[in-house]
Image (cartoon, rainbow, N blue to C red; front, top):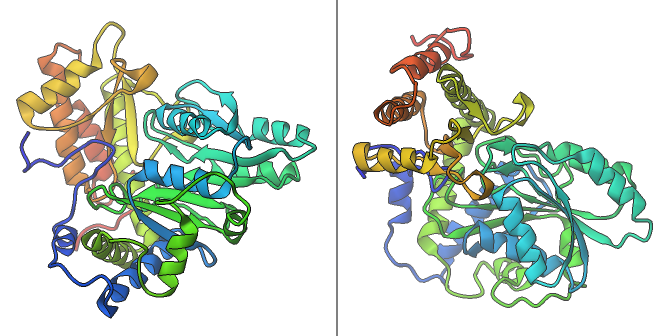
Amino acid sequence: MSTQNPIFIPGPTNIPEALRKAVDMPTIDHRSPLFAEILGPALCGVKKVLKSEQAEVIVFPATGTGGWEAAISNALSPGDKVLATRNGMFSHRWIDMCRRHGLDVIVIPREWGEGIPADRIEEILAADGSHRIRAVLATHNEAATGVRSDIAAVRRAIDAAMHPAMLFVDGVSSIGSMDFRMDEWGVDIAVTGSQKGFMLPPGLAILGISPKAMQAMSEAGLPRTYFDIRDMAAAYAAGGFPYTPPVGLLNGLRSATEMLLAEGLENVFERHHRIAEGIRRAVGAWGLQLCAMRPELYSDTVSAIRVPDGFDANRLVAHALNAYGVSFGTGLGELAGKAFRIGHLGSLTETMALSGIAAAEMVMADLGLPVRLGSGVAAAQEHYLCGGTGNSRQKAA
């Protein structure tokens, strides 16, 4: 694989040079005031990205999976009921984790390519008159299928049922790239990681926690030590960390939030939507279909693309890497061999996206798929043109 090419997996994402340099820093004394000058702005920056005024931001040395575990182990007790939709690999894995922790999971099964059914959530919660269900788990952006679910609708469903369940949201492949409104949507715990929208190497599990969820932690009975949020919050209050922190990554997080806020969050989201729409138009020009079943479900960070019946999508991913040094994502779970994924999040531009589209076309042509070279590129170019019908940007001066 050529390190000169952009990467088109759904994370980890391309790392801007400025952030790579921010992570690559000399060792400092993490018990000195200098560390607090890194940690404080990083936490404040994440809070702004979450669009929250009241969340407590907690960062663990881990990945998004560690963030899932921190969420459930700090706020729930053995035997608690939780409600979750399974509509892809990552929602499936969170459900599996809950069961391993002794939680009683009520699963709403959905076809892969569908979103979270808010009406079904309301129905189940309304029938739970004794309020045994403690939390609703929702995957905002299912990276296995390229499906974005409506978290605001999930909150409305909880409220309509007049149910006190907390709302836990996996925002690993959405936060920092797609609009996320923690306070407005009534999210109690939001989970993300450093390696996607924040454009950093893997290594940080990032959580936003509402006052309601913080209160629940005083009563929660699941065991936790490394992931004890109370210990982390107490250390933060003193400007420190309860154990050795990943200083370089935290410095990168401070710089990443500064970069996102300097671009402007709405501009970040619009850029992701514009790039994603160009890729979707390329897929249409190829005569292929997305796994996401309807336009309102389309993700702006990853597109899962079905290949023709009888063709092994893993051949496409392997040939792209071996022949052209370009990485695409494989299909996961039920979509293994049936789809490949193009990640289009983080540090990405239209011209970078066009290179990925062109590479995909060459790979499909090499492997005998009926794709006309240049068809997807042209469709995306029409959308990306400055002043074009699909592009809201003004013409370059």
